[in-house]
Image (cartoon, rainbow, N blue to C red; front, side):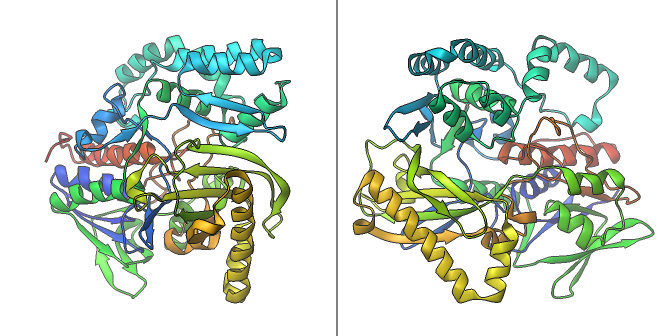
Length: 498
């Protein structure tokens, strides 16, 4: 039986795959280019502040959701403190009117009806859909690749009550749906709830989970969460090699048999799993040798999550009465210099997590999306001084805008930190600097992409580049599922305890 497994990437999917494989008697090692675990699920320190780079909410934060029990296979969920937000976000317009998105469905419905009575029919349609999916859970215990005909029949019966609304809402993008509304503020609210190209079903699921109180924020942030899974993996006997960038997946007779690092070290393996960037894995590490028209078409045509600039501010004051997530219009549009223009900005006020800031101080984070990652890479590579000046220019504009909104920002500023698409690529190598992977659009749906590549044995690809929609829970399931697949191949009973 093949026992020596090398995993590329210590992101959430790589760590989870390693944990489950260790539980099932395999000898695994993870090779990570960064110096910390988590991949895109990360945080970093600046002058006493912890700047968070990932989790807005974690699906499976309470026992009411099946994912809670999967997380509990890896970490003791009872030891985590979660915040269940009363509001998803607030959006303001230029006249000072505010639209809230409460996480309680009844309260949300009343808020929107009060503020946008002209859209009553659409509001009732939307909230009805959210209520419908409160009790819905996607099958998670068994890898779809291992479904028997009987499993398929059971899933059909489970899905039957939801099939028509599921099919309806997954086929509509948020951008197209918001055009149906008459009220400008409600239109903007839908626009800023997430990415317009995403299927409306994503918003419906998110609000259903939050109503259920199973999508809370874990106090301590993203790296703290990733460290808990890292500890489980190390305690199970796994090994992680940090600062170890994989350059090549070694193949012989169309079988993956090891990896070669950037420093030319070679590590043999019976099985190789890549939890790293999909494009880099397929077209660089494997030189594009194991692909087909479908894979090439996906990488040419499917939409990815955008890249972004993250402007993080440590402010020596509290914001007790501020909403934790607010979108508001700018007095003057913010030009990023890469062709992207923002007329609103969204700010997350971390007044709900005391661990991320010194006492009496608060972390503020603004994300500015962009589809032009190339601009930032080339600017950093060609003129580092101009790159730093551009980051400072954008940070100054954001600080000015937040000063106008809240007051007392610049005068109480402790820390300014700016991450760009070039930063994302430098630390995670994620294709295009994307903050996840494939978007969950009406075109992609929730289809499963293959974890194997055509013509290559003993190799698996996991994570957000085979799981449209991405996200931390999806990474958990991707890692768990590949361990099940490997156990099945070797006729082993899949175990979920050490």
